[in-house]
Image 1 (cartoon, one colour):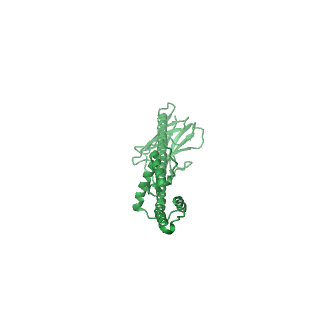
Image 2 (image 1 turned 45 degrees about the horizontal axis):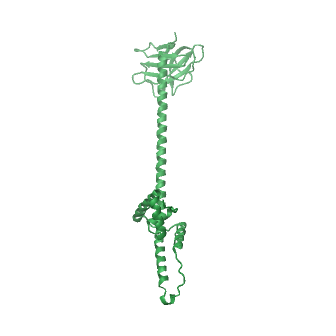
Length: 282
């Protein structure tokens, strides 16, 4: 394989605009024949140049690019030896050299106006791609967080349903009916309570509708004579039906009875009104 001299990637852009001298053009052509990556870069440069030729406003080249261009020009400039026949032939040859130099400078000046835009186009493309990846990453994080929250909620719901079923089927569960004889049909409440677990389920029916600032509150009345323990608040629906599922109760409290009162707001730490429904543990 013919050895190929290392080619500066910036020279590919000069090659695309036909601004390289003949010897460097030959080296670049040889390099392109043996380098797929160089051919890919050349294709991108052609594409960028065609776009900017129709849409880009021209700006002054950066200082580093101008210095690089002038170094290329300096390498190409030829110093002609003194011609002993200069007096006879006139200044034809120098004028031709100066004319060629000016033409190359003009062509390189055009390159200096276009090359900065190629860099800006590549930078803009990389920036847009990075922003797209950032947004996709944020959306993916949001999706994962939402899925995790839904999974936690599903697990909590499943655990609660399992506890409810265990409470209903527990052979050690106490079952208490709360009622009154003042009305027909009378309000009633049914409680299932597992003492060791502190798990309680209440279903009530025929309850009176309450004012918006009132709630029903359930109380566990301990067997050892301590003050009643609040066991949660609830409101009935339009048919007078209500449920209370797994309120926060301490474990291991032996109940003497359960009772229901009507309290203000979100409930009270101690009963403030008379018990309207009560059931003793048999």
